[in-house]
Image 1: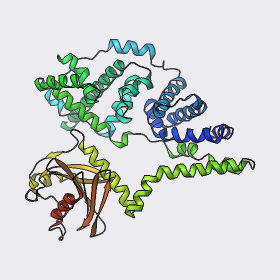
Image 2: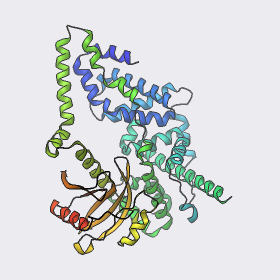
Image 3: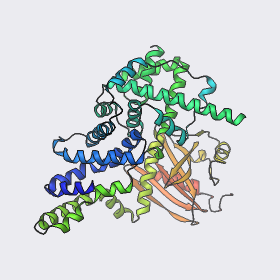
Length: 190
Length: 257
């Protein structure tokens, strides 16, 4: 893969690769973070990023300014879904999901309110348990600190959808973390 | 506004994506609705927890290496391209210089890489602490409440001192991290300004205070009694100096462990 990159790189005018390096490479961490949370596996995430970077490099000519981070993250996301054919990329499954699982009212009991488990392990597990569309939205928002507009453009969704997915992602996380800590509690008692 | 509408808007409000009118509507709703206020507090907690750096997955070094240094191999490869490569390298050098320019100026001013990096980190930490609900873990103007609060949370006992008489009332404390250490952060006020004072154990016993400026923030660090102290604030430098002097006042004897 890197050899491939060198070959392409050396076949280009220096200016092209210089600006690719200046504009896209700074977001390597962002690319990996998204890929890692989508793939939930180090090796897979590296493959996704490697492939996405190659695509980004190839299509860099078609990048017409704007936010390189948003552009790269959209490529990472598409790469992930295309490398992972088994899971249908967003689309149908999600529209269904969006309508069917409208926010369910489950106000926490006062006791549960105090019980949210917020250690890294529990958070990581709860995040990884989210369905892909919710997970990518919350990762882009909380870890990557993207605006709704940026998330909408990375995931190809409407801003309203981004908003409701975030709401559902957070509600699920809250539910899961509350349950998690209740279980811990019960354990302690026994 | 009904709770049902508020449920969605709550998140947009948390994300600072609402316009002024909607923000007013949601805050008004929260004033009258305990459940939504409680939810909001929980989601704020959740957000804070999700911002832990260990959840952010940085690219592994191997991957980074594959993408970051392709130049050297091409340089050796072809002679006719040498001039071009030279140009590219020169451009790269200028680019690198531009990238590090702020640092460079800083170093030039401060004569110390560590100081610079720390000042940077301290100011970011200070800014982060200014975000809603990040400022304090323990809210108290009483040093005898704040000091015991740190017990068991740190492997040292921080020095806590009320400086109300000097015009710097203590308002609370918080756990924080700097340079990979857990540190105690004390929060003081100077009129409407907030001063964060960080402290953690040091190998050296004492050093004179060093002040640095960073985008309108002043950072003063010193070491006393085997503790590192760093004060940061947007108050003017004279006031922050006054604060550090007031705090240092009787610090010559090491604090009890």
